[in-house]
Image (cartoon, rainbow, N blue to C red; front, side, top):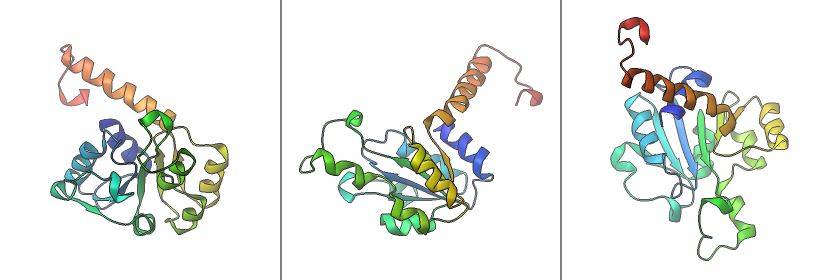
Length: 172
């Protein structure tokens, strides 16, 4: 969650007033709930979008709005998209493996409906073809490799403080 907050702040500027879409396979997204709390505390509107069968209850209780994927695509400033892959868990009952990916991914057809200044953060490595499609439409794209540096920086900063590092105003 801290990594997502830091990454969004770096690429999109101020979080307050932004519309953050947490989408895709919410059920397997272990940080969706804490991201929702963090972004709403910082003044963002959080939209949860994906197949209703994969959105656990309780998101509206912590300030999110559940909305259809097509509506979220038009409204979002930042997309934290969690795509289902074979690695996220067992196959979804009633859905064959070849049909899983289209249910959770931002498709090429959705790109023209996104805001030109939107930012998409994928949970996995994004294909070069998809990156080019986003870039052609003025959309920033980050994959998990882009966030790795922020994760290391946050962990190092916390370790520094826990180990008794300078807690004065210049340390932050």
